[in-house]
Image (cartoon, rainbow, N blue to C red):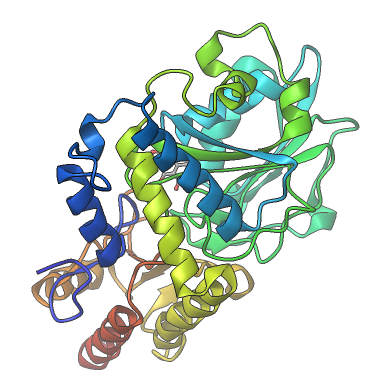
Length: 365
Ligand SMILES: Cc1ncc(COP(=O)(O)O)c(C=O)c1O
């Protein structure tokens, strides 16, 4: 039984989250033996030829799948996405300069707090006043005069909002894409640094993918310890110290799986269609379900909603659990329900949840 077998357990976890079965099977094989080398991936030296091939292949597949231009560097770092809350301002925010942050949820809140320890981090739009139900129009952003960067989070995992297109930026544009990386094409004309923790769409927890324009590396601060310097990681091909070898291997497998699915355009089509299945059940429930996110900024990755009462939310969770649908509880900060349906989540699983929702609403409405 696997979490992706539509007859059995469906894993709606927000992260770590579901991965493609074929990737898990390949990962299992490579733990015992990597590519006929007689040694498993967990036991290979990170300086040896077998792992060098793994990381080169992963980097190349990442560039291909993401359509990433040559003037961007691809880094595989450690410390998850949260490390970037500090590393980005440490590397980019020079003495006496400001950075503009668009505050759209818990994760931007944490990023703003950490950046404030390092420099002048300004909140140029604050979504807490609308319970993070929607995202701003460009005209609402109160940019600083000369910020080094504008920072946003393209998919707000907890609240279930997603930017349909990047915001207007002043300075360079930085995006925390942790919960939607490679769920749709990325506009590299508009972005200068995009990063993601791996544990949703890309692979095992612990690795962070950082894609950074090379001229930013040249401009980044030199007076930092090596492990905190993006330019040092780039010079050493993400092998400045022992990298998370297994995580990088699995990410490479996931990139190739996305390519097999038809790449990011195909992925986006599938994700839109899967999400629409659930939003139709919310909108068609005659007011039984309430979606948290405003309709124009709904996420294709994290579908957030509530039943008419907290007691019904609890009953929904208990009955869903009995029906093999796991991890539908909303984040503790907003409660309610959340279905996380990342790239690897099957369309059939969304249909199963939608039928369950329709039936539950009919019985309890
Ligand atoms: C949008 C976003 N950013 C950052 C993080 C933090 O990730 P990590 O636990 O890898 O530090 C998360 C985790 O869920 C997230 O959803």
